[in-house]
Image (tube, rainbow, N blue to C red; front, top):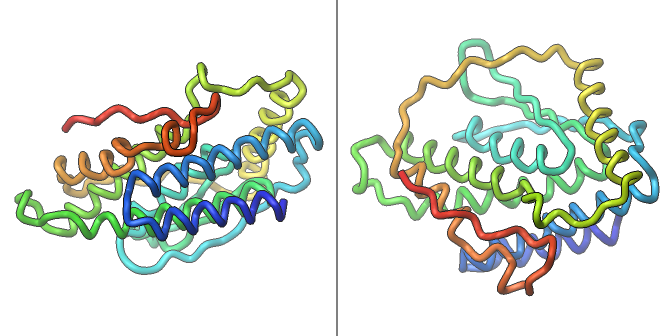
Length: 237
């Protein structure tokens, strides 16, 4: 676990220090690929390991907490974890995130999600307020929603790039996901949140998706691999 964590941290550090979005996305894709391979290896060796399922509480502060929490949710779903959000009554502002999953999965999810959150906030600064009639707040929220949605889509491996996994390992991965569902049911009273009725900026939303979709995600810079994430399509408004 220390080895995989250090390798993921190294890739994240390279992504955060790169001034080029395409290069940063390539490093993040490599990090996710390592995490997926690690999960398969652990499933082969240790099975589902349901006893290691638990949760971490993450306090959210600052602005755009609801949109930033969507990035955590996207990374969590791709790595056999779940995210629950807590908001004050009548408010859409997220005050606390609860990350649920196996201990090794939670550690890696936090590393990747925190980095993607920082990268999204950095790229958001490049928005031009003059390109829309909407307020800067609506523009930024829309950008972050688009970014999170595109990240979620690209972290789902297409069937034709799925690495060969033995039946026992595949069953262990399914059981690990079931163990997280059972943990949520046993320990949390989950209610469906209110649907967002906030304003939406279509241009900024598309820019957010393009920030995560038009970059090289590892097939060229990192060398073509059977389990590399494919380039995402260019979204339209």
